[in-house]
Amino acid sequence: MQNAGIADLALNWRYLAFDVPPEKLRAALDGAKVMGFVGLNLTVPHKLLALEMLDVLDESAQIWGAVNTVRFEARDAQGAWRPVREFDSIPQQIRSHGFNTDADAITRAIREEVGMELSGAKVLVLGAGGAGRTAALKLASEKPREIFLVNRTVGKAEAVAGEIASRHPGLRAQVGYPPGQVDLVVNATSVGLKPEDGLPFDESQFRLSRANAVYDMIYRPAETALLKTAKSAGCRIANGLGMLLYQGAKALELWSGRPAPLEVMRRSLEKNIYG
Picture (cartoon, helix red, strand yellow):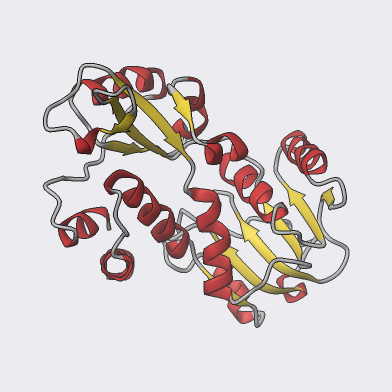
């Protein structure tokens, strides 16, 4: 996806993947500065760890409490910080600037892919870890009527509910399954990644026949057990491909300073996911 976008913009760049153990994340960030990287994406478990390691955090990273995109910047002759892409050679003084492009991507994908307006909706979020927390906080900012939070470790769900309550005093954020119908179910757990995985919720507590739409943040496999069951129950469904696309496109815009070629990136992503 990123290399397709980079090629379309005719940038002399390459997007590469690296396995970095959590205990070596700081060294990897420092190494990227030295080697003149334009930027980085971070994935689990680095999104939370990086908060304490970056030189400056954008408002998006501060609000959602996680970083998935880093842009490297340097001081120009006037002392202003500018993206390193604007310099002819690797500058001496470089800083790391952290952003979160995940949160906006979640709500954009839900609106576009399941055709749902979140204001006034009743939402069930499955998972309260890094992805679940970001999803729940972003969904709460869209002024839904109620949010229900379910997590294997109840304490995590309670912590997120407390955070929502402090940010949005008028919104009902409850831990546990909803008693009646919901407009939207969002899966932010990893249940569904493996072929043998079942559903990411307790079927004795909740049935998908009580939901209008289901959004699964997992994109590979393209159709999880959750989405298959939801389709059978008559729900509108979407997987995490749209979220992946939108967060990646925003990251490319932050690095390049140019609009991302969204359809080029989408085609590349769909070919990779769907074959």
